[in-house]
Length: 65
Image (tube, rainbow, N blue to C red; front, top):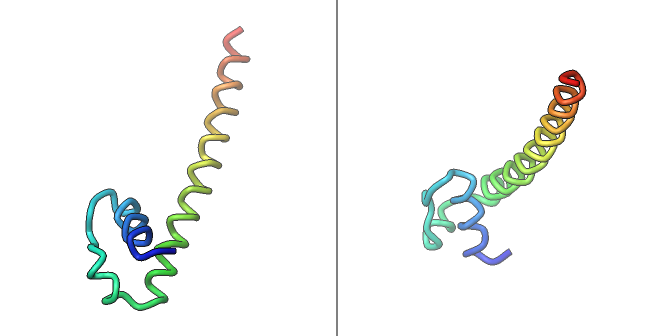
């Protein structure tokens, strides 16, 4: 992954710019890997939460009939 993509991913995780490309060298590899893993895991959690909400909505719809 290119440096700019890594910085964009980390900034997106934080919701705003916290890191510039020239700051990336200040982070060790373990920290970068952890942040990118969190980003991946959060996406999976959000997907699971959306599926749960869809099931809950179907149940609500079925019980209103």
